[in-house]
Image 1 (cartoon, one colour):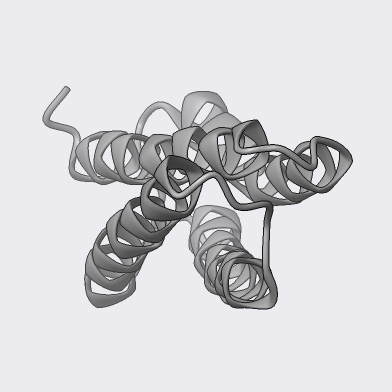
Image 2 (cartoon, helix red, strand yellow):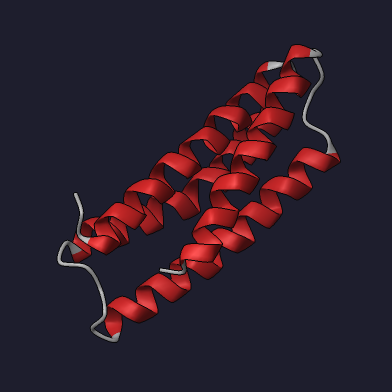
Length: 120
C-alpha cells in the first residue's frame, strides 16, 4: 500500500465527487471532464491495487489478506460500473451515481489503510 497514493486517491476522489454533485445539481448529463476524471481515478486505483497485491505476494501484507484483496478488487470495479451507469442515464442522476461511486472510494481507501496497518 502506498500511503501517498492513498492520500491522492482520497483527495482526488472527493474533488471529483464534488464536481459530480455540482453537475447533478445543475441538471447536466455526464461530460468529458467527469469521464476523464473517472478514468484517471481508475488508473490510480489500478496502480494502488498492483502495488498492494505485489506486496501481499511478496509476504509484506496484512494479516487479513483476503479482506484486503477483496477491497482492492471492489475498488477497481466501482469507477467503470459508475461510468457505464452514468452514461446510460442521461439525466441528472447519471452524475449523481458517479458522485456516490466517488464517495465510496475514500471510504474504501481508508478501510484499506486500516487493514494494512492492522489497526482494525
